[in-house]
Length: 279
Image (cartoon, rainbow, N blue to C red; front, side, top):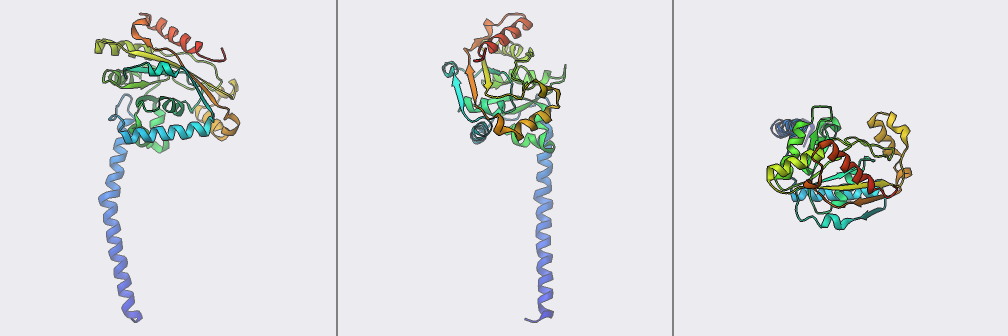
């Protein structure tokens, strides 16, 4: 085959390949991008609940949680697992303290096959250029706006989670406290438990959990931006990888919570504090 014959065939092949690739981009890739973008925009909204995690998504959550717990913590010691096993209902709230960014992996790892919905700061869903929701929402995470007065939709969604017979995980402190000290609790957890019980005309429970890591950066880190705090913890994970002790307390029925939300919140905080093995 001479050069004059080969060139038209080559150019024709390139043209056909370009048409096929261009068609795929316009028919599949671009519409797929906009569908993904629309999904991410929805799940970023405070209180928006994506469908419950599928079994496949739940398995992915457990595997990722186990890997990152091993990577960032090393050894995990769990006390009081019988208190979790004693719960025969799924309508309960897990309320751990929040002393480390890896808490979000430790808790699913400890829960094991119990699937749950996770109330998270909106920044989790807007991470990775706004596409964090595509990764986290299918595994049960939903957004909460932590700015004062803007979290009502998330509280309403949390009540819906309990009423529908699902387990809720939320951190009453809101933000992480990497100095290892227990921060002030917000009132959402106790209010959600009470409202869900009233709507169900049945019982809900709060499961107090305390996490104690082997090493903390210290109070100086709280002066930094939260993203920088996480970066320091991640970069220095080998230094901070000293294990974690997880203590699960006895379930608190909503009827045992003081009627006043402020008193109920302080009561819950005192229970979580009492579980600290270093106390």
